[in-house]
Image (cartoon, rainbow, N blue to C red; front, side, top):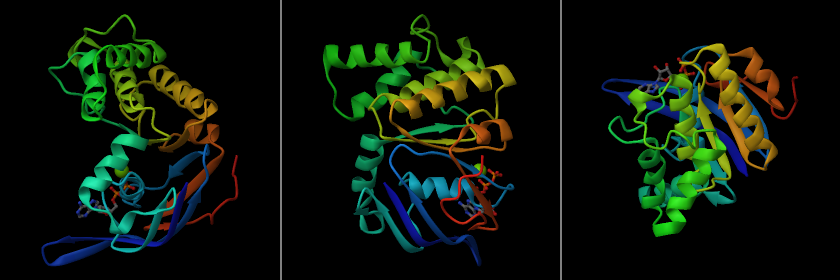
Length: 227
Ligand SMILES: Nc1ncnc2c1ncn2[C@@H]1O[C@H](COP(=O)(O)OP(=O)(O)OP(=O)(O)O)[C@@H](O)[C@H]1O
Ligand SMILES: [Mg+2]
């Protein structure tokens, strides 16, 4: 599904440039469950942004389902994101004045799903994360764990093959964090490819494979499962 070869990412800020990724080789097969770990600043979010087509590499080649991502236009990247990738972030990133229903509906509006079909889909994914009774609640009227579940429902709306999560339990207590991880387990079991950045060893231990980043490079090779 994902094939990265010699991927580099250089950030240019004014006069200084910083090489955040320094040659990443990484293959991810369909329906893998992967944790990305490593110290702060090691390039985890940078790598995820590239995987998720939120950004493009400075060097190297990225093939996503056989498509060369490097050469796509920003519109083509947006289409890929909306069609096959679901994002979950540490800070939830929900629209503050919109209800759970409206937050989850948004990506379906973007993808052009209409009427009853759209309504049913919103309710279906909110039920899936156990929030069928909180459709009208705004983020301020939800707990942290519930907000993250709305964010997951939003990520699932378009039934993406690939779920990317950047520290999804970083702002949650242990119990809410476990609920979120249980949802990721279920998504993996139902066939999604799930990639989670985490500092939490309990979460990493649930995954099939752990990728360790350090100073912009992978430090455990590719493919050796470390459970
Ligand atoms: N937009 C940017 N412009 C310049 N430098 C950046 C930018 N984004 C990230 N960096 C730098 O690239 C390096 C890697 O950042 P990244 O966010 O990928 O780290 P991380 O592993 O996700 O860290 P954390 O665990 O703290 O989230 C850091 O040194 C960071 O300062
Ligand atoms: Mg990060």
